[in-house]
Image (tube, rainbow, N blue to C red; front, top):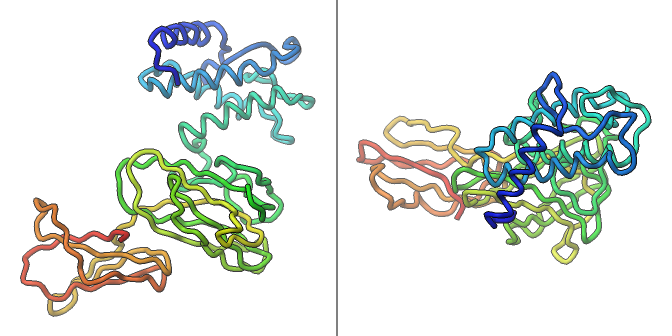
Length: 332
């Protein structure tokens, strides 16, 4: 995104004209408009997609521009609810509708661009039923991997399939408000036997050969989890096929869930000990730490490193003479 003040000023002037003059009124608000279904010829069909992309870039540069946000959301609403043919999932030229049965690549490209950019910036479409911490693989940034919706029991609208070669990967972009430990849980199907992939986080080979156990069928799903300490801000989590690191076999990837690494249970036992439990990734190592005052920043390890042997891990603090104690669980 350009930071030159003159360029930005000119771009905002053009955007201001566009959202006031190149729009059509719909039940969802003003949507971008470049012509009706019958009278938009040549490459006219694709103008809205490019306009939506640059308007989104301007909104990302200055999120105080609520007038941009309104048009971006109204356009996405109109595309999905008014321009989409529900039988064939193709999109009309006019985002205000009516739907069309015969379409070309340009108008579908524009509609899909708007929906994809809206989801990337603002999350899943409202009412999709997808939790905020669940990232659908089919909505991620995909490199040389096929999309499918053949086998049942997947979430979202599809899954990644047909990847078992070098050069194939998928990037999840996750924005985190605070630094700290998180657990990544991948939902998958491995119908051809055990599979494995490398997990890179912000360019670092964090897990070189994560195993995805055989699910016995492509209709059956299981999960594989890892835990990692993340910085605040946008993080890129990449799952890739890398034969040099041991990647093997076919894998269908459905989604990735991101959860905070924190205690799920704290129990005071008879005699004074405290039992702590948390959701963990089997085979991963953790440290439980404590302080005796919130005013302190000097955390002490409670015992040594703990290796999780199941998805729930427990640590016990022996009886202490302290009136209070505060705990956290981290990745070493």
